[in-house]
Image (tube, rainbow, N blue to C red; front, top):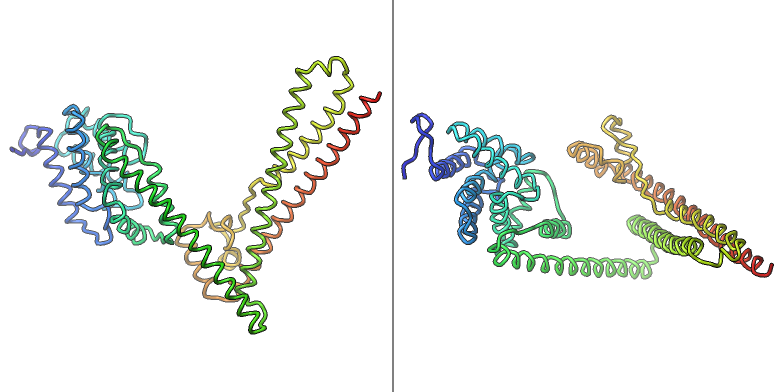
Length: 407
C-alpha cells in the first residue's frame, strides 16, 4: 500500500488515511503515555476498529460508511489520553487537526466529525457510520470480557477522577451503563445483544445478593450489640445512639410518605368519580340539591389532597456554597443539599477536616439530626391537616347528602 503525505501534493486515499490515523494514534499513545489509563487503552482502540470491520462486513455496509466508521474508531479513546474530564471535546479537536493536516476533503471530514460527535456525546446514533461505530464500541465494552475489564474501568475512574465506589455503588453504575446500551446492526443484535442482556441479569442478581448480605450483616451486628449491652449492663454507645435515631427518623419519614400517597390516591379517585357523576348523571338534574354535598366533598377532598402533596413534596435547603466561610461550612456538611454546590476538591478538604475533629463531627451529626426532625415535623403537620380535612369533609358530605334525601 502506498502512503502519501500532504507534502506530496496528492491526497491520501481513504484506505491510506485510515493507516495514517492508526500510526498517528499509536504515536500519540506512546508520547502521552499514562499508566493510570488502564481501560481506554490503545488495545481497546484496536479492538473497536477491528469490530467495526467485522460488523460492517457482516452487514454489507457501503464502503464509504464502513471506512468513515473505521477512521472514527481510531480517535474514540484519544480524548481520554489528553483530557479525561472532557474526552469528547479533545478527541474532536485532535481528529480535526489530523484530517486538516492531510487536506482531507471537507465534505468527508464533516461526515467523519459528525460520526465521532454522535458517539462521543452519547447521542442516539442516527447516521449509518455512527451506528456502525456505536455497535463496535458496545460490542467491545459489553462483550465476553465485560466482567474481566470492569475492574480496569473502576480503577481508571478512581485514579483519574478521584471517584471511589463501594461494591454496591459500582454494580449500580455498571447496571445503568448496561441499561443504556442499544445495538443497531443485525450482527450486533444476534451476537452482542444477548451477551449484554446476560451481563445485566447477572448484575441484578449480584446486587440483590449484596443487599441481602448487607441486611443480614446489619441485623447480626445490631443483635450482637444488643446482646452485648444486655450482658454487660452498659448504656447505649454513641454509635448505636446515632444509628438508632437515624433509623427511626428514616422509618417515620417513609411511613409519612406512604400515608400521604394513600390519601393522594383516595382523594384523586373520589374527586374524579364525583365530578363524573355530577356531569353525566341524571340524578343531579332531577334533584339539583345533590350538587351541594358533592361540591362540599370535592372542595374538602381537594384541600386534603393538596396537604398530602405538600407532605411528600421534596424540600432541599442549602446552607453552604462556595462563598460560605470555611468555619461555617465545616459545621453543616452532612445534608447533601449543603455540599452539592461545592467543588469536589473543596468538599474533600472540608470533609477531611470534619473527620479529624471529633467535636466538629459530633456537631454535624447533631445539626443533621435536628434538621431531619424539622422535616419530619413539617411532614406530619401537613399529614395531620390532610386527615383532619378528609374526615371533616367526608362526614359533612354524608350528613349533607342524608339531609338532601330526607328533605
